[in-house]
Image (cartoon, rainbow, N blue to C red; front, side, top):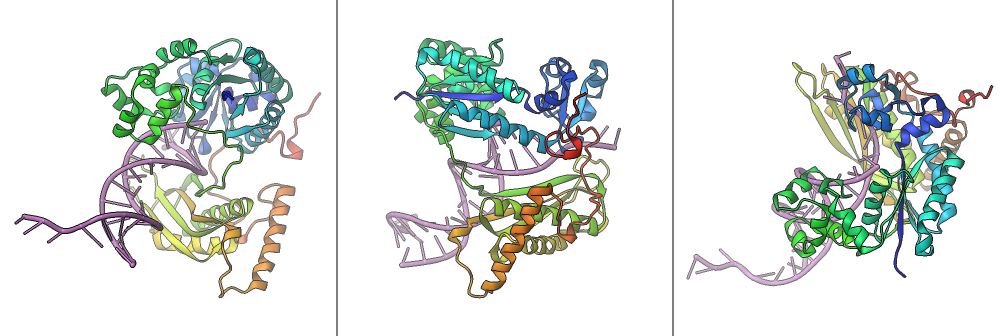
Length: 421
DNA sequence: TCTGGGGTCCTAGGACCC
DNA sequence: TCTGGGGTCCTAGGACCC
């Protein structure tokens, strides 16, 4: 059977989530900021029209914001995560196989839908998602993931919000009008290198010999070229594999100089990693701890350092991870610096099932710790993250990133539920 | 004053093994 | 002058994604 893949992409997702609970923002320019209120990471179409670029630092767009009366909102990731689950669950109604690609995108296998019905089916999906979740989406359909991405690019420009790209003549026309940097998998570096080779459009790349691409670039780009030709190289991954690396890091709301505050932040990150490890039933063998000062600060020496701490035993235990992370911090902390950010990465992650217990570990003790952490996770799941914490995280989080313009957690906190008058 | 957080894959080169 | 052949594992760096 010929594969048919749909890419469903939520329009300006974070902005749309905010609009569901603040309908007065509809039709107005709105942006959502990154952590610490740093950059614009989501823009409504009205904000894009004003010239606000993706990733633009807030302080550089203050003029546009003022003149264009742009509504600025701090990010609220627990709200977006919750809304994302609602969208994905709705999409499951429409296909037996679905790959959740990111917080706001999913690939659907639509091979069972007759070709003539695809467009109206896409329109139906779009209508139901909007009705059930309040989130507007665009849907692109093609014979490969990369062509579904291309179709989605076109769908966003179309009033129907849907686009089917299956006939060779339609695909060719679309590819001739698509520039290299708009292709999924081609970033600024490769598009520059490709244009030096005389290639200008997606159609040029599709017509180039993939072996030649592989020689000059690598296998990844040669796959992209094949996918543009309609030859599937990327399969639908319905079950997301466990993460091979996990990271927890944040910039500080204010510069931090004290070791004690850094210790609290590092403990928070180690604890957050341990929870993620337990969630995906993995163990880590080593942590990487890093700190750095503000690299944009003129007149101050930039200091950045990191160190890897092997754990005595593979672990997912919060206490063990906190202990290791703090010992790493002690090695790299330099007195007198104004720190801007810290974080912890879990390296060498293995499935908990596959790692045997060490002879030097007390089995009883391990079981006791396991049930303690299970209760810990259960409480946090029931009463909200951070309801129970390890004391070394501290209770005040003075290092917390800035989020001055955050909207209420409409769907996760009882006391912040929207009121209907 | 103010510049995010969290991932993936591939390749080349070095260390080491028999 | 000429210095084996074949393999694994790890790491750093570079590209990409949302």
